[in-house]
Image (cartoon, rainbow, N blue to C red; front, side, top):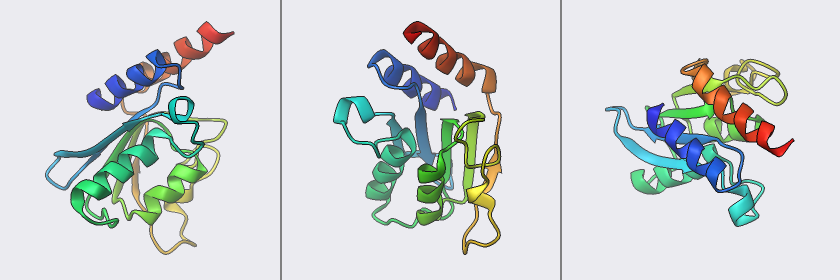
Amino acid sequence: MRRALALASDAGAAGDVPVGAVVTDASGAIIGEGRNLREVTHDPTAHAEVVALREAAASAGTWNLEGCTLVVTLEPCVMCAGAVLQARVSRLVFGAWDDKAGAAGSVYDVVRDRRLPYRAEVVGGVREAEASALLRDFFDARR
């Protein structure tokens, strides 16, 4: 989570919502990382999770990231939760809960929906205060 928080801080400094993500393999080594790049790339899908998953898949040489963990500073949205499932990520760890658009237990629970063919283990609230503070400070500065 330390690296994800640093990436989130970088995103905020660049004018994007401060969200950072890393993907680790089964041994815990980082194989992909990302931060929100929507403002920089003008790409609505350039969320930190998607950027990190793309880098991890390229690093692993496969789209199937079973056995990997996605660590992200904010609970994933519906799009990112779907990407987690499509990539077959085994575990999702996140910091701040998103009570407006979260899809890993707060508003929706896409990643653990029993109607879907694949589910991921979820651990939420890791270093939540730090992740929440980054977001709060970012949005307070814009109001």
